[in-house]
Length: 187
Ligand code: SF4
Image (cartoon, rainbow, N blue to C red; front, side):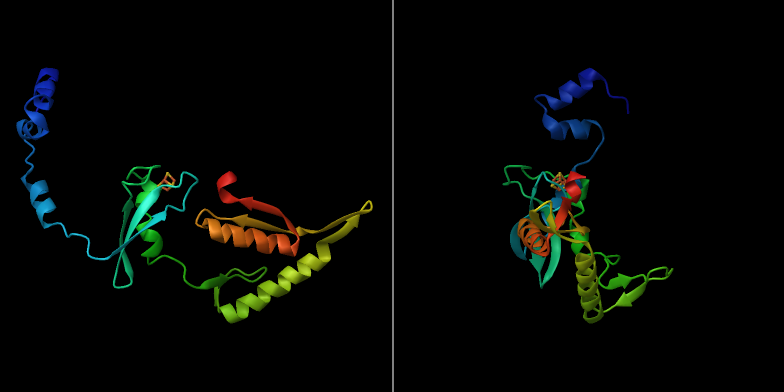
């Protein structure tokens, strides 16, 4: 159907939006029927902040029987007032996603294949390598100045880390003498 400007303005004027859709041959009955049957929220509702970028949009999380069943923009949040971008709209998939890695995957130096590793094996390996690298690259003093840092380890934070996790990570890295500390959102 061809829509003239006059037709559009007439439809959006006194007749209202419903009349416009009707005049365009778009029935609203299915939408109204869906709204009537839509399930009200039945789970526990909490709020959170989208982890993906520095905008910090507010989100509402609904949990039912220990499972996240829905995440959507928080209309009461002053930053986004309910709207989210495509990444924020897909936040639910961070929790419910068959492709999410739940095991440690390890590829040996020079190896081609990935293998599963348990935490019991992985943690001592990480500790050993951190210790070895730190010892080998430790700078205690230079030109009479006490530096006490390692130049052989860097730490890159990810957007999914929240404020508290970033704080703890920064504390741990500073404690190790790591000076190359960066965050993915700044790169
Ligand atoms: S919803 Fe989009 S804009 Fe908002 S914080 Fe998440 S990634 Fe950033």
